[in-house]
Image (cartoon, rainbow, N blue to C red):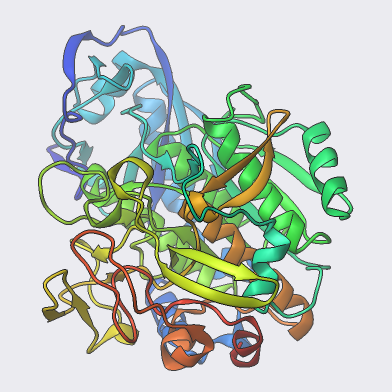
Length: 515
């Protein structure tokens, strides 16, 4: 039976990578298989209702979603049969997540998917890689939508920046002070759950207790969930992933201290990232109403199958009333790609993510004296933003234009990033505690949990989930503070939406009124 290339599975080597040797054929690995969902046409109608803003009163519960739109048992059985034929073991099977995790040797996976796995050297470290497409037997071609984890390259980076020596005019704020400046509505997030997706690092409860005591806030409930064998593993390096984990927990916990914070730790691979997101979306124990993601990478570094799979997970979240906040990146209009072009960060570029850009904020109490696009040059970062190369223009961005640094306005050809913004400049950053040290951190990594905490407060006060916010925000742009000064490299701020700060930073009271 002829094998068929899996659409969107094509890989190329990382820039600057070189092959060392074929992967040890006896190396054991785990691979995530994503199968199609049932009743996709019915789901499309529900997603359309979310886009039009008509779904708020008819969100599905997680159990309802699983029954209607999970995997068909026959499709899961077909994957099991395929695994058995190639000597692969089924480690996990989850119909709601449409996920089967298989384990086996490198040689078995190479034979099963007609790929060659090689050990690669890269300036950032070594990885197990492949090039070209994954091949599937014809009887699985319509069933399997993604095969992730054969390639172990690091898929994403954390979008935070530790402040360098303070420049003239530098300031720092506690998360509570930032929330006050933005006029967040009162609330503690009681009854809500915020999920944090983390691809490394960890937190220490002693640090959290010390930090929240300094703010006069009770330490919130923080639970770690292991995904694909990853765990809460502090590194003792404040400049490493611990900085991301602690920043996320401390921003959410300071602003919404009675929120249940659940941290999903996963490996930094395409499989780990997707598995963490689908685990959070379909978690029937903790039931997060908001998901905050501060990791990502340029769209050009992803396979189409991985982007499509993650975007599909965000669509599922929308139909269940879950808001997904994602940092837009810290490398301005290039997103750190050195080819001279403009790039945006994924997963922020998914139309079903609330993409969060960055500003430089000067404020005293609840009074903002200045707010501009965050752009501190090549060394200390700038708000990520621009135009997607993958996702079509969503209906709620129809007619919008991106203004370049020459003042020329061009209609969006695809999805524009970001949607919203908030304080991100390390020079006006957040007072946090990382690995026993008090420090100041910025980056759009801080903006995603800032918005997540705001939404937790709004959900608590309104008694219902805000859900998929993007359509409502674009219909009510005056609920945000328009940022009209600054640039992120190739794009300028402008009145209304722009490719630096989106619609602007939060106007908390006004936002509470439209949700």
